[in-house]
View 1 (cartoon, rainbow, N blue to C red):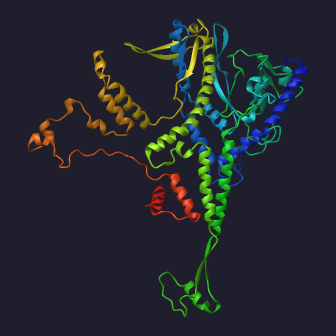
View 2 (cartoon, rainbow, N blue to C red):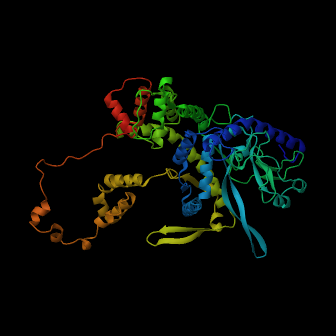
View 3 (cartoon, one colour):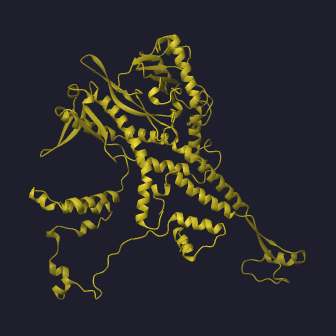
Length: 599
């Protein structure tokens, strides 16, 4: 494939058009799933019907938080010991840059896209400025990672797996005038560039996801004219080709790929369930959406039944005057009637209990299909005991653990490319802070000259385990207490022999902070601040005060929490059985009321 050859370029454009048509159903379903995700109240072009039970939003947010809640932290190891100091500097420099939430936001967007179809990330360098030195102009650049929307993506749909792609790439938008003035673009092609004026649709007629908030009107809101271009990577030729929308124009730019040796060049793909013989995955939302829509259809039906419910009074014609007096009477008023039973109250319509029971069953089935969302999201107890809930969570987390492994591998590849571009910048120096013992913190730089001494491949980049998952203060405190009790305290004699010990004050300060007990700092104080023992004991016999009162019943038993009470699932099952006409035991009804929030 030579993109500068007109025949080869024509074949490439035809292949791109063919693959875009084959990707159209996936783009449409992604857009439809996002419309359900935002519901009917987000914009005028969201869901077509009310989404009262938004299971899609709940599922996506629970999984996104489980998979990429925090920015990643990298660990850099080195093959050669002599380069280890540079690897330490590289690790610090990368972690400093990854603290910027730009990369983290891009990773989270990819994770969310992978929940609905497929996640695409592009990693490269971008120019952020220029400067002059000794009469020469230099461009200042930095690495970046950007999420590519599914609607802007294309890959070779004739391939069964990504390793067989003949091409892949994405559509991007830029200002028209700068595009026409770019010297690295072909003069003939850039002169033919025109501003986009079409509707917010793709070339196959399907709506773009942005139309949900932007509408389908023409591009009238741009402050400057825009143009859309395509950047295509050819894996076999290792070429990056920039194309305009004009079919007959030659490429705007063709350059050799000089980045990391990846199969897809600057691109990385994230998915969770591969389909044999297909290059597009089975996204989780494709499994969620059916029950999500069934549940909302059923709930809308119940709402209509509730709206149709009415209570009316029926009366015989001879009792019409009595009925009229009763209707006109105020609350608490006494009226005289010939027939006190003139009005018979009747109800019509109302919620069908079988439909409501079915809705409760659909809710349970959805949670099951989505990997036990109630447990993953902490939405309620799932069993009668705390230990059983922990076992259930351990089983449910196996599904999440598999997805976390995919995200971790994807992130590792992304940040490795990020580090590659950082390392190969020929000019930039990166400020870092080294913690040197016994000197303490030392401010220094990762210099360009240091990076010239060896290749980036001398280092290996990995993601610190669990760095991307959210850890609550209570979980952090639990880990600290476990390490203190199981490791530090048993080893305290050996630690003391080596001149080490526990900083009890700092331990209690940490407990105070993570357990949200600020008063603990006032309870644990230095010995100089402790009042004399006589003042602590007060008047009376000091020995009796010190020993304290003795309980006639002996030591007080330790209270242990053995049960979480009735589970939400069990309560819903009892409610469904009741609505279907089954007889429930008093204990089951009491447990149901307790789990549902009753007295």
